[in-house]
Length: 214
Image 1: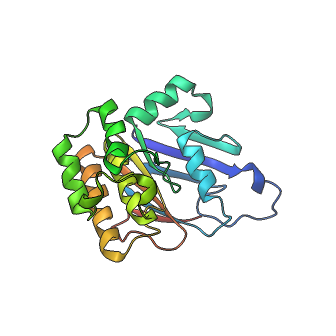
Image 2: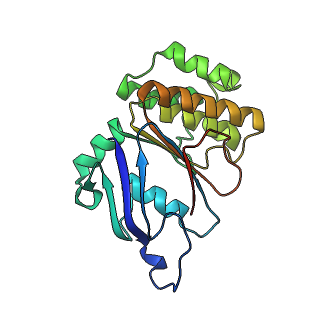
């Protein structure tokens, strides 16, 4: 996947508004593979909706969203399976980790399916992110900031053309935010992938190709 296009897209819940001021909604915009984007938003402006649309979890919008020129409204379940397996990786705001599994198991459960990273590479990430001592700890016993780092690692153990990171550092200090950003860019760079980061306040300090105000 080389390109994501939004063509006059708007959440249906906003359709009755007289005016929508946004760099994204009711506009024609594109995300290109290899570039880095920041989407800044206030609460209630449709950030979570946008992420759900791009991931194919919701269709309650007007307008068109295309992947390489194909309207995603036409995609079938098996198409989305392939897209999420090979082309689009997601770091959810709510993380969606398995609380009954350990930190390492939450990463390995995906890596076992993709075979993308060696165990020593994943363990090196744990060390780099400052949670090597949490490898065998149940996720439910970890802080949200620690869980965010585990969720990032899980998002990186697969091939992707675009990485969608929804508020990835909301509970992290500046040092860990910087390391998270470095890991994202390193892996995206290896794959020539694009990165789309959303934020309602605190965001990773990256060299963004473009910043949109939602």
